[in-house]
Length: 329
Image: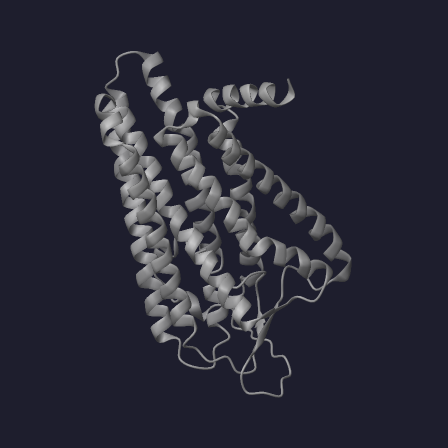
């Protein structure tokens, strides 16, 4: 994921100085070897069950929330429409690389060239889309708290649909830019990706041709996505905070904070974990630490989001109780 690369105005692409070579007869790479977390056989099975558990919880949590929102008319509001899309993205995002990662623990960790490019495309697509879904959710909370009387008109079904359409289109454009520029590179003999998935930075280290244009595309696309989404979310919550502080009663302020608290936590986890990962991998010789740090935003955050939005949410709990009663009785 490319979160918070804009924070690191340093040449990240010169990290990971060590490049392992795999013997090949041809001059071009047709498949890659995903190094994963460890080459020690004794650790493969524990890793498999650990990430399988995370994946199962991610699938159950996000599919459960999607189903719950779809089945309960009380949750057919703009806020839960955006949450529906966030859960959908997290579910698809996990499915892009986790099944392959699990199979690598128990079989050969090889991925074809086209398989790698496909994984890269959908990885970038869902990550970029999630950035703007979080922006839409922040805007929704801004309208709900700062302009409650105009909320129904401002956040109409047409507006909500347009916001989601734009989020997915921006994600698609970003993914096309990253994948298209990656397809122009030539990979000769070096085919070991020092990661558990096909990501831009590890792949750039393997190219035997100039990556200047790719680095430029990377910084422009990531810079635009991160800057636009971060500024939009910051402005929304600055206005929300300013409005909340004007509420005279403590109970009113607490209720207002409660309506956007879950989203603040989700944003902090998504952007914060990405920033930590890329800041970690920006130091020489820190490839191993960066690979383990990236687990948090690629595996843990999609698992936590359904819990964040449901554990303290009275509407979700009420809808869940109604659904269970309807199914069981």
